Structures are given as structure tokens and as C-alpha cells.
Figure 1 (tube, rainbow, N blue to C red):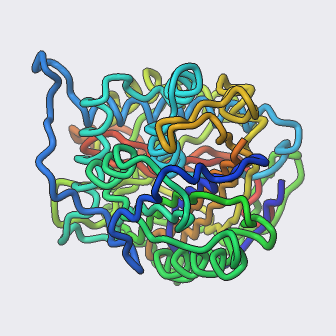
Figure 2: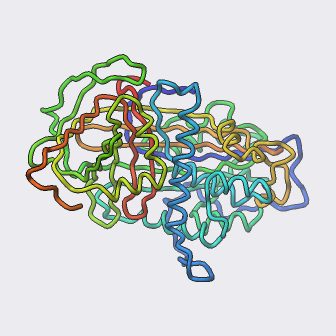
Figure 3: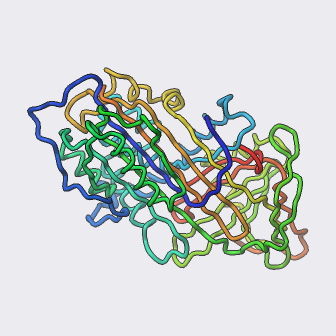
Amino acid sequence: MNQKLAGIGILVSLVIASLLISGCTDPAQKPAVNASPTNSPQETRVTTTVPVTTESGNAQPVESVAAANNQFASDLYTALAKNPDNAGHNLFYSPFSLSSALAITGEGAKGRTRDEIFSVFHLPKNDTVRQSGFARINEEFNAADAGYTFRTVNALWAEKSYPFLPAFIDIARKYYSAEVTNLDFKTTPEESRATINQWVEEKTEKKIRDLLPSGSIDALTRLVITNAVYFKGTWARPFDAARTKEADFRTGTGTSVKVQMMENTGSQARYRYAETAGVQYIELPYINNSSKALSMIVILPKGDDLNPAEAVLNDDNLSALQDSANFQRVDLYLPKFRMETEYRLPQTLSAMGMPTAFTEGAADFSGMDGTTNLSISDVIHKAFIDVNENGTEAAAATAVVVDLAMASSGTSQPVPEFRADHPFVFLIQDKETGTILFIGRVVNPAGS
């Protein structure tokens, strides 16, 4: 695991699924599906009419997909936090990027492979609920005039000679707005890799470069599925840079480091705030011009032990804390921080309950090509975040490589002080649907 600081900005969720063939030749009897390839897949815009309820009229697709994403966010956080390789390190990733990428991948899975993917990601097994839920969420996120920049983009990059099933291509296009670009992985794998990496750079404002490392694409690659998410938001109550001062931050290892501590105090420092015996909770909203309000939520333990804050990430616990929050004055102190993280997730996801997708001979992605020759060989996720006086930029990228084979408080109450000078948990959430877009922890703002 390689985690290090980097200049950030933007949130990219790149999900790459390189579909390769494990020692088999392409079925010559089936023509390759061209699927009207485009040179540059467009930002996700759903143009088809999609149902918002199931046949019974009771399902809520958006809420179901948002709840699934949030449960996966909590599950993966727990798995990463328990990994000894991550001890003493910051965490940061985009559950929405991973969910989007693996949802498309799951659309091409069958049987046990499909069941395990949908179970780990808690995705609705009802096709109508799942597909229309993602379609509506993507459509709403890409709406204009939000006051912040947020977009999500999907694309399929297909080996030009390989026969993918039209039904899989149609689902990816209709519900995930993933257009197809044909590439020559067989004879020009490095050039194909460069093409995809260039697309990633463009969709992430050059914040994620060389997502696919040298050698990750070869003559056996059959498909790469990409999802990119970009976010840039300005605080509704920006911090005054002149008031930012050097301060001590107690790290997760017990040492102290110097950080640039931002400050927002006084009568204008009003936030949705709550606290329990173990944690403090605060919402930092971003400027928005629509109902699609986004906020950064910071959960600060009252001591240096992160466990009470991490326990809040359970969806029920988080909802209860949010419901108890009131709009009030808070003296806020928050460190500036930037981080870059990278995760290789096959072992983690297998341990979470989807080993079959990674097992040659057992994986079944016949919904993609009509064969059982495909299996996932790697899942790579990268993420960036930059938090400063003006706002937040974040980026995340995921590569799935598949081989063949508010009420005001009373004035008599004391003003709470929210001083984040020790490890804390944070997330960026869409307030309308509750979808968690990014999640992480800061144990050392000056380190990895």
C-alpha cells in the first residue's frame, strides 16, 4: 500500500475493469460488437426514461442505491482500518466510485459471482431498482447550476475484435451512460493504456495521472470499465487565511506534528452540530444553488482513540447523530490537509465475501461475452483530497482488472469548541440522498 501526500484537487473515481482472456482464443464464430464506439465518452447524462419504482410501486431506487453505497462505505472502512498495513496511516477513498464500477461489472456477472458482488456492495438485486437508482443518481449529480462542480462519467474500453454481448453493452449505456470506445489491446497495449490514462487525466483535471501503470494492459486485455467522479466545492463559510496559524496535532501514533490550523469563530461561525459522550459532530456545507446540497461531515472523538468516531460510521449511528444536530455557534478549528492514497483490493474484497470473481475457472462473467473465461485479476483504487480555507477538491480512481480466465441553541448555552487537533474521521455526503461520496480518516495531516 502506497500512501503519500500529494498536491490535490478533484475527486476522481476511476474504475477500471480490464477483461482479459486466460489462455483462450477469441470465439471466432461470434462477430465483435462495435456498439457505436466514440472517441471520448461523454459525461453521464441519462437520456432514456427510467422507472423510479418497481412493478409493485413500492421500491425507492435512489434511496436503495444510496443505502447500499453507504453500507459498503462503512464495511470497507472497517476492513481497511483493520489491515495492519494501514496502522498509523490516513485513509481516504470513494465508495461511490467503487460501487459504480463494480455495479457495471456485476451487470455482466452470473450466478454465484453476481450474488457475491451484489452482496458485498449491498446492491439491490432487483434489476429495475438497481439500474434506475444509479441512472437517477448520476443524472442528478450531473445537473447544472449546483454552485459546486460535480460530475460522474462512465465508459467502456473494448478490445476491437472481441465479441461482447449486445445486452451487456445496452445496459451499460442505458443505465450508466457508458459509451464504448474500441481499442487494439492485442497489438498495441501500451498505446491503448496511454489512451485510457489520457481520458482519466482529462476527466480529473489532470489530478490523476498514469492510473494504469506500465504492464497493466497487455495482449490479453479485453475490456476496461472506467468511472470518473470530479468534485470541487467552496465552503459556505470560508475560513480566513489570515487567521490560520501553526499548531500541534497529536497523531495516531502518539507523537505531535506541526500543522496549519484553520479557524472559524465568532458570531458568524454557525454550523449543524451535535455531540455525545464520546464524539463531536459537525457539518461544513458547500455553497450550492440547488437542492443538491453537499457537506463535509467531521466526526471528532473527545479523546485520541478513534474507535468512538469510527463506530459512528454505521449507517444507523450516523443517521441518529445527524438527526440530533442543531444549527448553532461553534468555535471551529480544523487543520489543512492533503493526501493521496492507493489501495490494491482483491484480497480485501475477497475476504469481505466476493472471492469467486477473482478465481479463474469459477468466476462467471458470461453476461459480458457468453463464456466463463473472464475473472477479475486486480482492483486498484486511488484517491486525492485537498482541504483548505476556500473549500475542498477531491479525486478518486478505481481500476477493476478482469482477466479471461436545525433549531438554534439558547443564548445562555456555552459555545462548543470543535478543535480537531487529534485524529478524526470525515466524509463528504450528498445531503438530499444521503449518498457518501468520499470517506476517510486523518491521523496525521502532515504525513501519510
